[in-house]
Length: 603
Image (cartoon, rainbow, N blue to C red; front, side, top):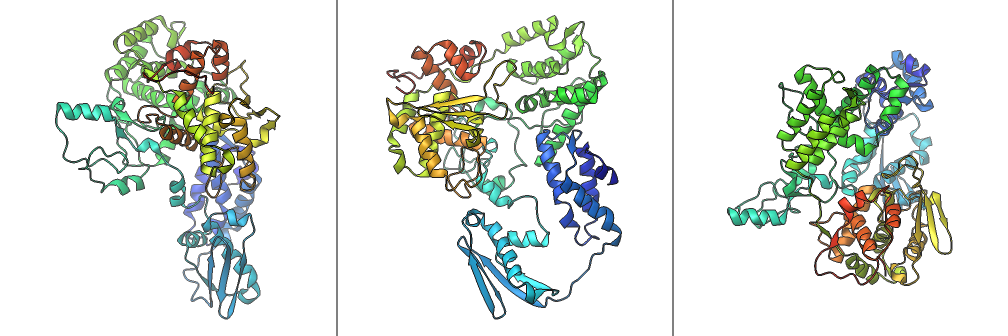
């Protein structure tokens, strides 16, 4: 403990160890729970910042030192009373969205909330009611044992636990949706299966959202949604499964390994297991850099060279590689080209295609390993082997055609005039116009901030403080422009944004993110929420959202721009690409048959 107090930086793992020791003393230290929250919150923030790498270092803050000094000075004098006896006074408190009140014997009073307080969650208001009550009757209860009666179980829990580090769990999940767990059989594939076999009598796995026929039982629906992070089936063939958003693998690998085989990934229960696996995986990567002779600081910089999305893609294959090396009893860094080819062969025999195996090759290349004078990913034998993989299992495009932007534009024109729209409709229209007119990813849209916004007579200019997915050395994507469109004010993102800023000014409090929720507490939204909003507009416009995901907006707008003779260089600049290969391979698609191209992207 003294070591943390004196140090400026320590590893997250060491802080977690100290917290574990402190928590173990709670049964003997009555007020211990009041003096560890800052440690716990600092550790949680550090883990998020370092992608769940427990071996990364974190700064020891002043608030952490204050709590640790309390333990260092008082630990030997602490006791825990088995009972405090019967309470001398009983106070009843309650709170609503308008105000608060209390009753203490014959003393009854209360008050209204301030404008800022009224925007807070009801659980917070219940706690504030207790706080103001105690202040109001402090002279009557000083030195006495009191009992407080209230109707909020969450507030009761917070008081009895002497605080908390998270908001009400049920409230969190009522506002945050995990679409990755709501799998659905592709309708066309399901129909073909039924035609070739027979129609099933019952579907025990379905929920009310993905049921395919009337014989479905929903008995497990509540259970499955109540266990959002556990008991989730691993999909054997993702080709026949439809999900509503991009799927990011958080799979871990069974530690039991047989020689020459790689275990099938299996999801662990609980987010902490995922974090632990991420930590072990990335710690091994850091260790390999250290074993190659790089300094601790150099290894840290190497770890920062990967963006979070790349790490999520690589970590599964890095785990499999480490598992393979343990099974073969070989070093992770002293390898031959035969080891690499055999590893990729096992992935191939397990059913992976060219794209996934190429990602695995990239993960191995990220180590910087050299074999026979070549980087492992560019070794001639590996390159030739990958050509064989491509010939046997070529990469297939996700879409053979795209949807017509006119479908969405016609719907957005109906949402006029903007001053008569509800906040929800205004928000949906703004998000979709931003996405279409800039071919923007959901990540880019959700990062927009009014702190870095400049307004002129014909455009809004935003600047980004953080890196975007397309950010790379030598290319500046820090400026994002939303231009006015005078030919049709109904599709003018400039006009919509002006109205949105005016409408949200009084409710956004201190939030600086451009996009906030259209329902209380009007907090900044996540990237997943932006994607869900885009999908909502697509669905309302008549776009088949069973086939096209929110990310397809990017391809649809770029394809239409190309059709209307927008220069390729302008398309590449808007999309953030260095050459046209990415566009031609993954985004340039014909519009679905039967849909015309009379107008431009907004014309």
